Image (cartoon, rainbow, N blue to C red; front, top):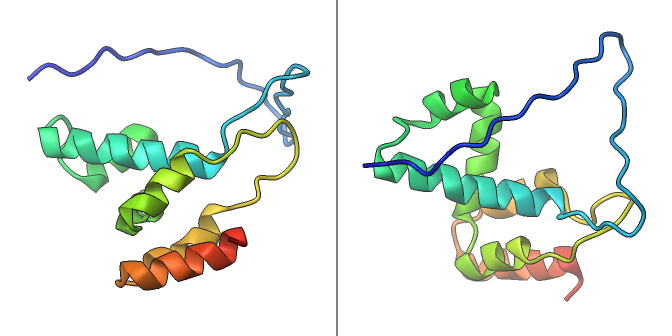
Length: 127
């Protein structure tokens, strides 16, 4: 099996305590973080199923993340399929905080009943 090509890039490393914010140019929208994490979870699950990556532990090592953080991200796959789709297509934003955070989705993902998840999702998004 062949894996898709990988794009590698480097970022300048700044030493010191302060993190520099990467400002977006005016008029540029960004995809909400939870949408990017949802896409990442789908991609990682696909790689695991295809045999490109052994398990979540290997994903954590490759991504330089803890296994707990990978589990948080992968728990998004426990959401109802229509909720996952809505997360993927959340409206892009320019500046400011995202309206939905991963921490808000974790309790919803722990609910086994998709109908109850939909009720909780609707309450979260005010639909």
